[in-house]
Image 1 (cartoon, helix red, strand yellow):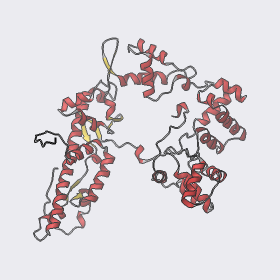
Image 2 (cartoon, rainbow, N blue to C red):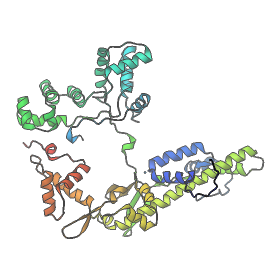
Image 3 (cartoon, rainbow, N blue to C red):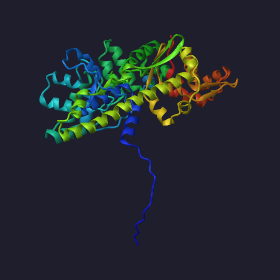
Length: 462
């Protein structure tokens, strides 16, 4: 039997404005700029005050005071990893627009080669099938089927292979390769070296790949029937090749610090980068329109909604600025020795420590440190760098595990490359230095620093 029951329930829900504030807090400076541009396009009640100030000398409007509102290697010669395949059209667009430099894309190069229309169609389909790393993992049969469906043209695997070989020699050389061996072989063929050297290098890549990846120098010397000196020369040349031709220099690879920390009169001072403190405000022009008595009711309603939205956005930006400064100042206070000794003494620290210091939630601190960077006189650091667990020494002192990692890196950098240190050797050396480490801990730290194991660090010392 159905019954109607009346009751009271308490639910906690985030308002759209609170969600917006959290998102703004998490994004880094570059993403904030994009979000502000989007808001400026969508909301007429917002304006870029920098643009307004720049053009103020050309205006004939009155100088009445405006209203003011305070309102985130190649060293092991491994195969490139598989990338998730998305929509083909999206992949093509990503490939075409990867660089903002004055440099021809592979697609533009295809168009100027003087190929016939069928070859151009094949070339477009190949480029549109590439993964994010520039490799072609789509079988030729699949490309032929796609061309048949789209253009009702029958093409053979041989015709596709011919166009593929042309594309692989475009810039970047090796793009559209089907595996690492093919990628390196194409680049070797284009090297300005003698033919015999090319043949040896290609043989090593294709016939002795396992020995090549594991750096079995002596075995390669026997298989190729060349002295160790020649093997070393082959490795030196091949090591300069690009195993991931699809990876190109893009703006996202650059770091734009969100903070500056510097000494002023002997004291550490924290500043937000100018780009992290955008100049955006309420538009006086549309505010006047909202206040005007002769403005239509529907227009006023529209502008009022936009004004509320603009105020919420400006408040979120101000809140972001205040919270970021609080977090960074708390980090500097706890890591004072680090900043005063040019990065020489990093203390163990957790996000909850900063949260307690500034009386905020740990999730807020986590959003602030995600994808943010600080500029110092001795380098740029990601905020996450300052958070690490403690490592005990035999003297009972707690040190940051990042300092332990740096010591491991120093040992590896200074090792005899003909006889690299094993993880067990490093653990023994660290224990003698007073750091209590097991071999598996050394291996974990080494892998986290993307340092290959000893066998892959080995070099021929002539």
